[in-house]
Length: 154
Length: 186
Image (cartoon, rainbow over all chains, first blue to last red; front, side):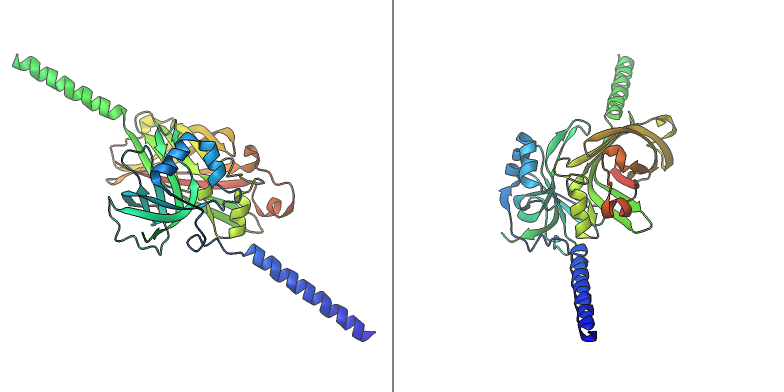
């Protein structure tokens, strides 16, 4: 009888600890590693911007994910501006001179962007945050925004 | 002849100057928005550095556009929940917007270095719901440019973001504190 009781206690404790550990891993699951993940679409800045400017809703459906795990893109384009945001991250705008908008890429802190200069043709991998569109209140074309970016070797 | 030409030239110069002033719309693409939720159980905060905004120093018009998937959380699970249809539904509503006007424009001299308090009245659209909002903003004019910072309190249920049961209803505050900063270079 005593032995049986002990068995139940062990069983109970193991269920609790496995359940607890599972819950802990779900709650503390890591962020997606964008650079290690496969590329969903490869396209040029012009292709992506034009797709958004002509079909905004369809593009949002195609590229955005309901849980924020949106598509991972490799974008080829010309460096037209290099800046730093309020979080001290490098932001590189890829834009073709003839396009109304470009693709604004926020680089990872570990990314090496020091060799980049205006006019370079590069391919950048990152996750899409939002698309390009004309905003009546801003009175300007908003760029596509990519986050967690790094350069891909051409 | 000479005199009238001079008057003409001065008139042209002045009108050109006033035209330049009326189109003084500053653009910032490096804004920051932070939100903070406090409950006795936990504090939740997220940051977004992908904000575009414009400030028209002549009309006082202030516009912020916030890509909603640009908010980054410490915990991946929180970020997933935040984006999901149960919460902000960022696939359906990818951008939030504030559009307002500075109502005490006469108190602010955008050409003179200093710190000014602006009263801002406008409309805030989050999760597809638009509500009127009145808040104060701090405008700092320096040699480098103009910085606008504002704090606003947002009640989630006003924007049809409601948690009736479960962990979110106890761990997320009913009212969030939103801080926004945008820097415009002259």
